[in-house]
Image 1 (cartoon, rainbow, N blue to C red):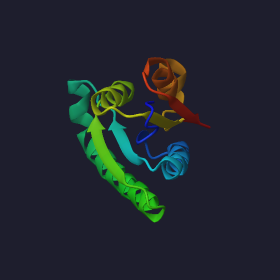
Image 2: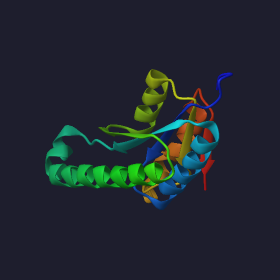
Image 3: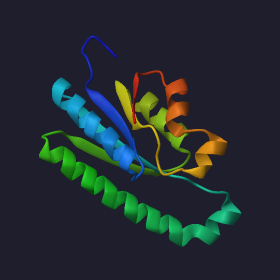
Length: 142
């Protein structure tokens, strides 16, 4: 954070209830600090030979992501907060860190658990990875 305070908040979203709780907290903070919120929805990518088989599923995920981001934008607008959305394909941890570093966010607000479920046991939580790798403050919402 700078002396100016919090002006840009990044909220990684994945369509889960926890990510929506993270958005609720970000809205509260944004109202207090007069900040803007950027929602980042990362759709995981898969190896090329596997991607061809699941292409229809990725199209479904993209439509679902856009719908969820629209709902998030409406929720922010109702509270008077400027909301920008971005939907990308990639690795969630890498995309979140890249976005923070290139767009100069002051803070990240992230839900403690997303939709990963069983995958989290083997790969580790995205929130945990962000806490360890981020160069800006991270607020983890349970």
